[in-house]
Image (cartoon, rainbow, N blue to C red; front, side, top):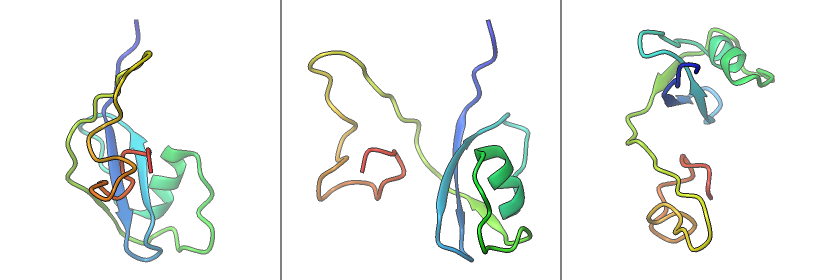
Length: 87
């Protein structure tokens, strides 16, 4: 059985993007290039050394199966802004 790594949300102020990645608790992500490498995305026009900031976010519990409710507020006016990925 493999290790389960937590997910973290990071925001890049240079391009306004928020990206969710998985990594170990002791790992630090400080710039856009490192974040893109972890997320498997292209950096685009944003400089690789652009600073990223880890956002404070609660743990999300996704329930599966018939009749499961989405996370509270997602897809509604009280949505958290899409960081849960359900916008």
